[in-house]
Image 1: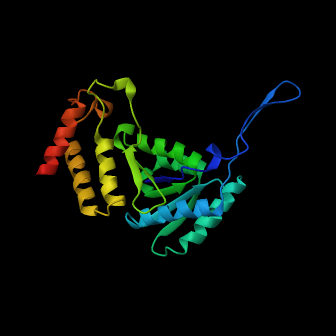
Image 2: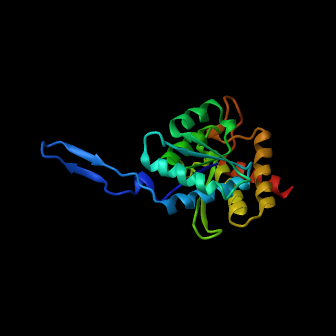
Length: 230
């Protein structure tokens, strides 16, 4: 589970832009900036999510060279004292990227800033074989308010072809039950239904092994629905 801060950091910091220099060359500038409240907010989301999973939270930063993430580590560590039941560890983003490929089973919940989260979440998605497998949520500051969607967003290039993988969308509904409605049993039923269908060998085109029988988007969806009805 990658918990990514979405409204701050390098993508939104100022100053930013491209300026012309006196010698005729250009300089591009982006600013990574975080305030204590911004870090506290996402850290608490991370700890709350970790409590619903294996009670392990990894905070990813680059505190050895980026002062912004020095503050990040300091604030996350302080917030962690309010969650003594959650094991907090820290890792530099370059090492985390390597470790995700080397041994992904060591991770459970990762909390990190916007740019790092953007990259690591896509890397983590491909560990499943396809970005069509993973759900995502944009969690608001108000309790239970969120937007749920597959991690890949829309796929207009394959619209109408019947080959999209619906699993990420289905699992996004499971996330909604878990994190907005506190309905753990409903979320687990959906997740178990997806797992059983995959264990039976059903595959959409993006996750099909060579010579495997491929099913369409609607066929995969119907199979999950039938499993739920059981």
